[in-house]
Length: 251
Image 1 (cartoon, rainbow, N blue to C red):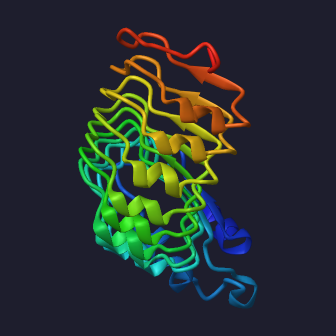
Image 2 (cartoon, rainbow, N blue to C red):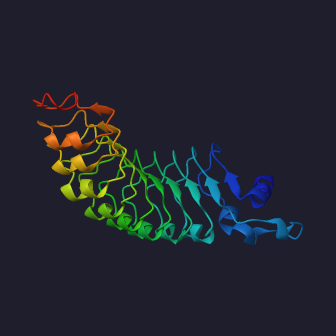
Image 3 (cartoon, one colour):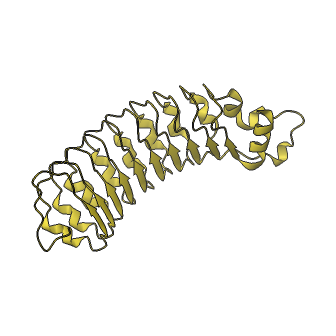
């Protein structure tokens, strides 16, 4: 471990995946404070990338705040049941992957991580997404598939740079007109395997949309406004109920 940590202090990147860890070593949280007398402290750099995937980690300490330069944090495929509020104290965080855990709630404090570009919280036990995500104005890639989410917070309309949204395998019943009309940069949208009853007319404003997957829902008709999706190349609508599509529309 000492050798790995020394290398991380030189590169700013630490990969501890697939090590059967049950907790994050305290040395990781200490970052540069753990430098020994023999270390070349003048060559050390702050940790920017931390990979802890495919372990058995059950908790993350608030001490994560001691890594203020962290830009990438991958905690996927662990046994986390929650995230600490201190996750919002990472001002440089751009990528957060907590997929394949046991998380039931993402703390509202995540809205303070305003540099966040990509969030993957898929394959957890989430019933909702925090409304504070609407403060993450740089967010462009959001993956929340295979959870228990019944609705999307209206504050996500503030995330105007959103280009990829994957909500497959949840319990969504609708997507609001306001959300679709705000996501003008959206290129990929996957809401398959949900409980959607329809598609808002505002979908016609998504002129950059390339891929639309709404298969296995309860959608009965497609609004004619979809003709405004000039870039649409892939559309999946199978396994819906009595679906009606205009001849002039996509098929």
